[in-house]
Length: 154
View 1 (spheres, helix red, strand yellow):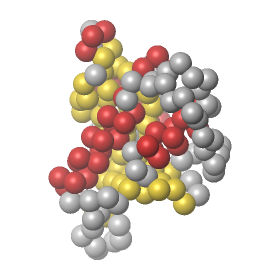
View 2 (cartoon, rainbow, N blue to C red; view 1 turned 90 degrees about the vertical axis):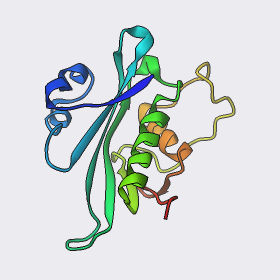
View 3 (cartoon, rainbow, N blue to C red; view 1 turned 90 degrees about the horizontal axis):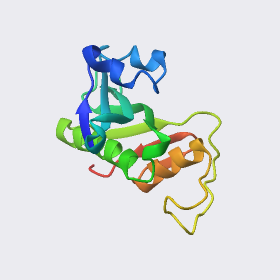
View 4 (cartoon, one colour; view 1 turned 135 degrees about the horizontal axis):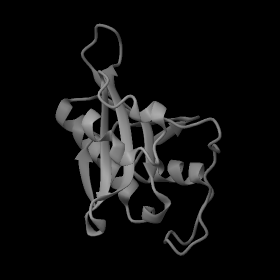
């Protein structure tokens, strides 16, 4: 799997699995988008992450990255693609001096994530929203309600 930055001119690569209101933000000021591609399948798009970079408070110099959208196609899940995308944002945050990375999960995500003994692709999957939260938890995010925050480099 490889990660590449997506721009206005190549957003069509992910338009079959990313909503138009999300792909329309590609190229807008403050929005940054990365795609996960399967090099063994002729660079087929496998996942997508979009985040917004802005300052924590007006007039302050502390940068924050807010993840707006993360999606990995079902056939590519459990191959660490989501983790790779999140890790890329964390690396960007560290290099840019950002003080925080956050994600706001949709309202339909359960507060409690059930335990799972078997964490392989062979297990019975949870709902997409629970799997999304599990991915962020596995990458070190701490949740307060629907908002997850990662501050490991501070």
